[in-house]
Amino acid sequence: MNQEKRLLLILAAVQFCHIIDFMIIMPLGKTIMAVFNISPGQFAWVVSAYAGAALTGNLISTAFIDRFDRRSALLFLFCGFTLGTLACAFAPSYLLLLVFRGATGIFGGTLGALVLAIVGDVIPLERRGAAMGWVMTAFSAASVVGVPSGIWIAAEYGWSAPFVVTAALSAAFVVLAYFVVPPLRGHLQQGARPQVQSEDKGAMEGVIDTVALRQADLPPAGEALAPKRGLRKVVDPFVRIFSDANQRAALLFTMTLMLGHFTIIPFIAPYMQINIGFGDKQVGLIYFIGGLLTVVLLPFFGKLSDKYGRMRIFATASVFALASIYALTNLDTDSIYIALLTTSSFFVVASGRSVPATTMITSVVRPENRGGFMSIRQSINEMALFASTVIAGFIITEGPDGKLEHYEWLGYFTMGMSVLAVWAASRIKAVA
Image 1 (cartoon, rainbow, N blue to C red):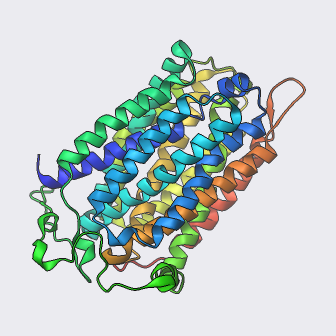
Image 2 (cartoon, rainbow, N blue to C red):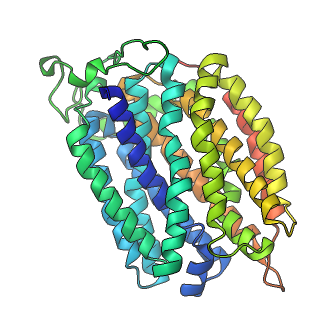
């Protein structure tokens, strides 16, 4: 296995742990509401606490993350994330669970942004869609393996057990990353562009030439190119990002896409259990089948976006997403098979459009500023995620028969944001 593939594999593993930690809380919603005796609205705050803290962490990291070796930053954030996940398993009360989810989010949110920045640094734009597709299969793998396993573990050993297992898995990958990930400092050289050899017969056989850049040509690790002092050093990254119309368009795209995607997700599992009749273990099928399909199809979406254009594939997938969102949020059936077909279609098209979308976003900024931009982008992402869970918590109510009501209202809102996201995507231009 060559150097590029090893790096992408580690990045996918980091994303796998990060996504499992974030996703596992949602199918455990019914159990957590019962254990802590909380309402659907209070449960939504458990989800949004992670997003709100991630927003804060990303805003802080924007000012300095581009001044450090990507490898050092990756290991530091991954360790903090692992400890936060372990703490969640031992939360004795609802309030402390909120606190520990927030602590995990501070590290996890920035970790997700850093992974995407690294992919943007080392993979040229003409092959970035395929690479992004492979890294983003971590979402699918988490759905296929992580979430169903977590649900089963929770059913057998209690709601906290999945967090213990996730923390242990993360710790193992931290050790692996320490030995496998090379120094990644090419972005510290002004105007540097990591050069990757061209593909051999269509396969990703490139070798990251700048992973082992001559150390004499680079500034010492942790130092900026031209050291600045005081407040200017903190403010400059924000001024640079928000004064660029192209980057502002990418941030608007990020916000609308998240609102057009995540608003309905926290209540998919509770809705299927309470309204449709899924059992506690059957709900794992939602993530297993949907995730299995996306494991196969996400790399395909990446190749399509490289071949036919990222905007074209994103717009096409968004059209199918509108139909899927409507079907899911208006679902009224006694058939588990129809319900699984509906949820699986949502997983495929929603995840599929995220591949060209993320590739487009990484292309709006040069490598030397990409880490800071991706941190801001992740902050916007988390802000929208936080807003989406708050919106869902206010709209979803419990009816007199115990069923969840007004899920279709969330669907209409999500569809409107999806249309707006297509318009925002059309305003983005690639620069690197």
